Image (tube, rainbow, N blue to C red; front, side, top):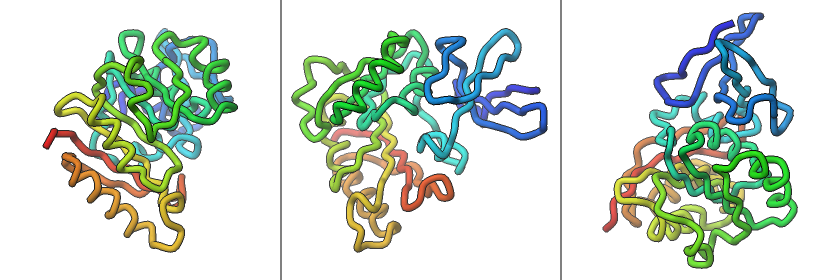
Length: 231
């Protein structure tokens, strides 16, 4: 067995198992506890959680070769569309005890699962039950952040992210937008949707750094990586 940092991304690891297969992983912030049935691996006095790219678009983007993962140790992250916390838990591992993950989710069932399964055991995860379309409603809770990660099923995904960035993202901060083409317009080709959302971000002050398609892990999805500079 071997564990090594993956492509120089701090906090992201590649675990080579006994059978020679390799899996993405993060160092477990809560040793002995998993969150969605993922395998726990002990190596060199540390415990790692296998990161399933079929259940996490961030893991899928990393394996599809995205150029940069700006989320790193001690960073503050605003996570829009936290759901039950699968990817949130891995982001929590990456930012560590000195970081914070402001986790916005609108669905009551998902937020309950996020609280009961993740934030109850991780002090760096702050669950926020709110609609990401109205960021002013959680201004009193969220401080300035280093990154925004957005994974929402809304028709105006890029606009919603940009609205949040204007309030919370620091100058020069980064965003990662998981574009769900079918949630935006089922009549248009996914490639057209990706370009259209990227253009919305450009008009709102973002420089697009990379775009990767997430097949075969997620059909009709892409991850856009961009950096913010206020206009």
